[in-house]
Each structure stands twice: as structure tokens, then as C-alpha cells.
Image (cartoon, rainbow, N blue to C red; front, top):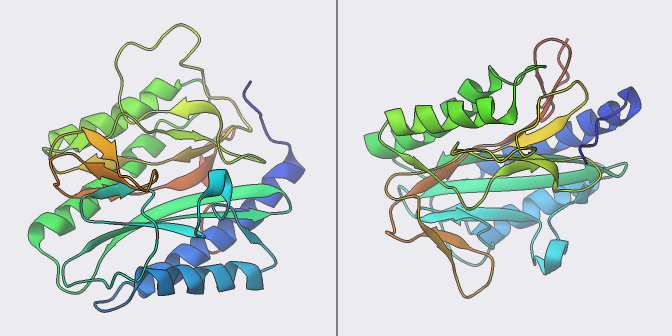
Length: 255
């Protein structure tokens, strides 16, 4: 069942989303050569707690950290550690914040130190995939319209999209209905809902330089590309309205 949010619930989600976006900004500013991923996790954890909120990911299905930090061929769910960022590392950071029982979920990819034209393009196209998709996040369209926009933009730029993981509804639970895939095949009947006001969705393109094929490492969390080519990730929580969609994971409320 798809949970459409009330006006009060949406306000709670704006609050959670704002903190998540601020935490993402903080994390991004810390992506520098020599910084450990654990130190970024610690700083974000402390910031979220200072706002009276809770790091959603910590303890979720026994996940051991407050945020996910995935580097180069790591797609998602990388666990922060003593690893130091190296020059040119492609660093994807995924953050969830719970405030008043409601969740804001967002991610972005940053580059440590000097970037290459190839890595800059990957990060740029991944972000663009989200905004291409956002154009279709309107009442009356279907989830597949959003998915198609992501897939087409990625593939037109020579990339592949991860198929084994997808965006999702979000609210009081981190993963709610519906799923928001980053690709379109032949949607099963009933598995491609129309967009309605009050739906809140975490839309998250995951884009690979090479093959879409992935695997999970022995830590049972970190997802990597099988061909070891780089991946990037970009995500925001959005609200479907009667008009234009609203991005909830922004640092300041829209005026």
C-alpha cells in the first residue's frame, strides 16, 4: 500500500529532509585527500544528533554506521572505516535522518582532490539523471515515466544504470511502496502506479561507467561493480504535489 502523507506529515518530512541535506553538505565538504571515511561518519553523526534527530541508517538491519560511504567501484552501502581518501577518489555519500518519526533520505557523489574529465562527467550525468526524472514527477504520470528518464539519460551518455537496487517510497519507514527503479522493462500490472499528491519518494539514480552487473562483498553490505569500473549515486527525497514536485532534502525551505 502506498502511504500518501498529510500536511502535518509533510512538515515533519521537510524537517528531516532539511537536516539530511545539511548533513550531506557537511560530508561533501570533508571529502579531501587524507580524510578517513570514519571521520566523515563521526562528524555527520554528531551533527545529526545536535539537531535533535537520529541517524536512520545506524542499526538498520544491523548496519554498523550512521552513513554509507562508497568509493570508486563501490556503488552503495560502503561502510566507513580507517580508509583514507586518495587523490581522484569518487566518493558517494548516502545519508538518512529521522526526525519526529519521519525520514529524509539523500545522497551525492564527490571527488577527492584532483578530478579527471571522465570522473566529472560521471558525477554530472548521475545528478542530471535525477533532474531529468524530476520533470516527470507529476500527478497522472506513472513511476515508469520517471524510471525511463533516468535510464535514457544515463545510456545516452554511454553509462549503465544499476538494476538490482532502486529508489523507493519513504516516510515513517526507510523503504515504503512504491519501488522507483532506474530502468524500464515491461512493468507488471499493478507494479507501475500513477503518481498522486502526497506521495513521498526517494529517487536515486545509481550510474556505472561499465556494466550494470554488481555483487555484494563479504561484509554483506558493500555493493560493487563486477567489472571494477566506477559508479556514482545521487538521491533526493521528493514530494508529489498538485503542481511541480518539491524536493524535501534541501538545506533551506523553499520560499
